[in-house]
Image 1 (tube, rainbow, N blue to C red):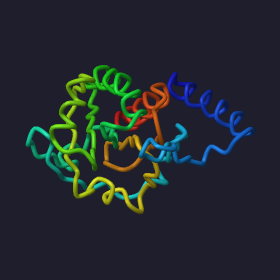
Image 2 (cartoon, one colour):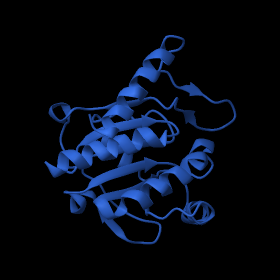
Image 3 (tube, rainbow, N blue to C red):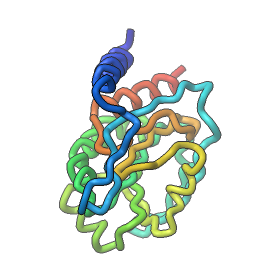
Length: 193
């Protein structure tokens, strides 16, 4: 059994045991925080259960055009965030580490920010040393691209796309880095077959 599969199996068991006390499908509105909090729950889709490739184009805060279709063949990690979101701040270092560890292995990362102006987003990116680009998504094209494909019910939400651009996994709320790494490793292994 591959290491990532063992990690995901252990995490699934942990999540199942934790679900005995509370529902893992609920999200709570955090009073005064201005965001819908996720509970860290995650979902993976088997290859045969995945829909069509996600189509999304946009402009980064640095003015560069990004088209997900140009990244077909690579695994893509999308992270929906905004600067005032406490769990977005808390997971920034983990996402930067995932980017550093997988950038040379055919993994692209892209932030998607539907709320902040350029100055606010760029200040966040500097403060947290975010090494990958983020789309200035004021028109919410990123959210629309996943509408009907995978529910985005919380900020942050992280979505892993397989090498064909299809949704392979999703985390609602602050990531557990081991879960996202397992999703990425599984998608890389699929692409290598």
